[in-house]
Every structure is written in C-alpha cells, then in structure tokens.
Amino acid sequence: MKIKPVVALVGLLLGAANAQAASVTFNDAWRTVVESSDALAAERANIDRAAFMEEAARDLYLPKVTASANYTRLDKAIEIKPSDLAASTPAGSNISSPLGNAILSMLDQNFTSQLTKRDVFTSSIRAVWPIFTGGRISAAQDIAKSQKDEAKYLLAMKQQAKFEDLSKFYFGVVLSEHVLQTRKDVEQGLKKHLDHAKKLEKQGQIAKVERLQAEASYDKARVERQKAERDFEIAQVALTKLLKLSEPADLSTGLFTNPSLPPMSAFIEKTLTDFPGLHILDSKKKQASGLIDVEKGKYYPEVYLYGNYSLHEDDTLAAKTAPDWAVGVGVNINLFDNSGRSGKLKAAKSTVDQVAYLRRQAEQDLSVLVEKTYREAQQSLEEFNSLQSSIELAKENVRLRDKAFSQGLSTSLEVVDAEMYLAGVKTQRLAAAYQYVISLSRLLAVSGEINSFNQYQQYQGLEVK
Image 1 (cartoon, rainbow, N blue to C red):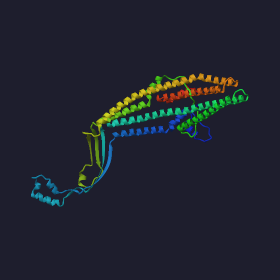
Image 2: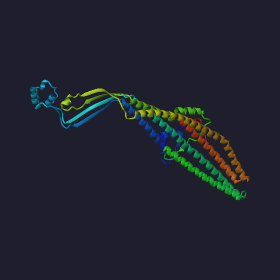
Image 3: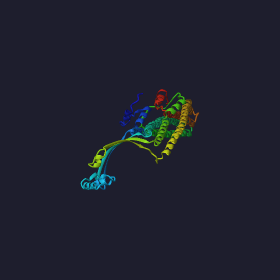
Image 4: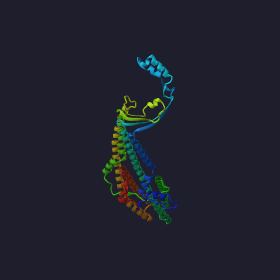
C-alpha cells in the first residue's frame, strides 16, 4: 500500500467530523511522531544550542578589540613653571648663578606651561590578540564539538525511546481490538447457547438450572465484552494523544510474526557499535580530556599581542607630546594561582576514569538487555506457533459440546467452559504476538535498526488474524 505523506494524513484526520477515519500504517504513525513530538523538538533545539556554542568557541582565536572613553576631573591643572625647572637643575650649572636666577624670576611671571587641564577626556581603541594560551583555546573548542556530538546522540536516544513507546501504544490498540472481537465472539456464542437452552427448557429436555447457568455465563460474557471495549477506548486515547490527532485513527498495520530472527550475536554486535548511549559516554570522555588540557594550560605562560590607538586629543602639552598609537607583545605568567588548578586537573583525570568504568558497565548491561529481549522474542514466537493446535482443538471442542448439549449429553457448564477456553487460547496467542512485536521493536531500537522494522513487518511478516 502506498504510504501517505504525514502532512496529508494529519490534514485528513483534522478534517470534517463526518469524514471517514483515515487509514494509518505504523510507518505513517512513526513519521508523525518524529515530526510532531515536543520531546524530540526539544532535543533538536538542544543540538542547535550546542552548535551555536561550538561556533562561539571558534571565536576564541580572534583578537579582542575594545573602544573606551574616560572623563577625569583633577583637583587642579598640572602646570610647569621655570622655577620648577630651576629646582630640578643640578647644582653648579650656570643657570643657578645670580644672573640665571634673575632671568628665571622674570620668566616665571610670563612663561608658565600647562601640561593638562583639570578636565581630562581620553578615548582610544585597544586590541588584544592571544597567540599562545597553553592549549586552552583548542581544548575549549574540542569540548564544544564534543558537546554538540553529545546533543546529537541524546536526540537519537530519545527517538529510540519514542519508537518503543509508539510500538506499545500502536500495537496495544491493535491487540485490544482483537481481544474485543474475541469477547464479542464469546458473547455471541453464549447468546446462541442461551437461546438454545431456553428452547430446550421449554421442551423439558434440560433442567432450569442449566438455563440459569447459560444465562449467568452470557451475562458474564457481556460484562467482559464491555470491559474489553473500555480497554480498547483507553488504548485509543493514549495513541491519539501521542500522535496529536483530533480523533482515533483506523490502524492498518496488524500484529505479525516472523518465521525466524537473525542470530543474537548480530544484534549484540550492532548494539555495542551503534547504541547512542555509548557514544554519549565517549563524548563525555572527550570533554573530560579537554578539561585536562584546559587545566594543564594554566601552568603555561600566556603570550599575546596588543595595540592601542588614541581617538581624541586635548589641546594640552601632554596630549600633543603623547604618541597616537602603540603596539607590543605581552606575557602573563601565573606565579601563584588561586583557582585550584591542581585539584581541578586531578578531578578531570578522575572523570576520565569514571567514564571508562561507566562505558564498560554499559556494554555489559546492553549485552544482557539484548540477550534477554532476544530470548523473550523467541519465547513469544514459540508460544504463538505452539498455540495454533490448541485453537484448533478448542474450536472442535466447542462444536462437539454444542452438539452434545442439544442432545442432552452435555451440561451448560461444559459448553461455557469450552467457549471460555477457546477465548482464552485466542487471547493468549494474540498476547504472544503482541509481545513478539514489542520485543522486536526494542531489539531494533537499541541496535539502531529502526528503519528496518518495515522490512520485518511488510516483507517478512506473517499477519496475525
């Protein structure tokens, strides 16, 4: 069957109230979840945030350029008088002679020089360009890249969880619908049995207690059918909310089984290679290694280029004699650091060890999970196949009990037991098929093979009816 686009599917389901319910395959439902899930959208936003942080880390190699302006109010203007020069002239020089003193006394009254005014305004552009930071910048960039990778793997893990949730909800609706139909069949069968019992009671062929037994069994079957209807409605509500639809959809993908499964070793190997949780731990290890480099870099000197250019010049002697620009090379060496770099370095190394232990434990846990899920799938498959003969036996038993009851050779209780046994075997077989599909979904999710689910269902699957 051709798969409808998700947008068209949602539009159809949100259409007129009298329109017929759309047919939704499991693949359609999965696409809808991927596109409309708020939880997945949040993880995608987290990836965007990490990408922006990585972009910001690339700017660390660029120079830092700042423009500054300052206004300063002095208690008095700075001036230089000839007498100040005389006071600073070394003893024995000619200017200290009586004639020189007389000349300076005359100049003192007319040649006072002002270096700066009381109101001083300065503005400049300053640039600082780090050229060696002990590897701290490259380490910070590596950490940002690892954080972006971690965000991608977190999205993949969330998608796996959503896939398992959808499998439970979608096929839970399919299972509950099958169970409801089984309960309806039991109710219909016991209704016929009750009608037959009433006729036989009127003809005097059976006792009243037999008719009462048939009536009580029919009432119980009706209650069970009503309960199955409620369970079906609840399952529909959960799926409808997950898909964000306005009304329950008509599901077109049924329960299925497969003749066999690939070897368990293939699932384990694929899981240990592609499981996002392991890649998240790898990213954590890279981040911890980056922190080690950052803390080690604090032991190295920091070398930088700097430059300064004056934008404003006052009409004063000091401003006119000051240079317009200056460039140079600077070095910072931490003789004593109060940031606790030694302890932080040891903590980062401990984090690397911690992540290594966590990864080994995660590999063990994943191996156990895959093996457990694989064996559950096999068990469900074996149970489903083995119950086929029980269903055939139960059907034949119902037929014989009905015939014997009509001839007075069997009791109503035996007929009811036969009907209930048939219903129980059908339900058990359906539950085995449901458990197989759920186990298969989990296997494909943890091994990163979600896209192959359609192959198991459509091309290799045996439909359960």
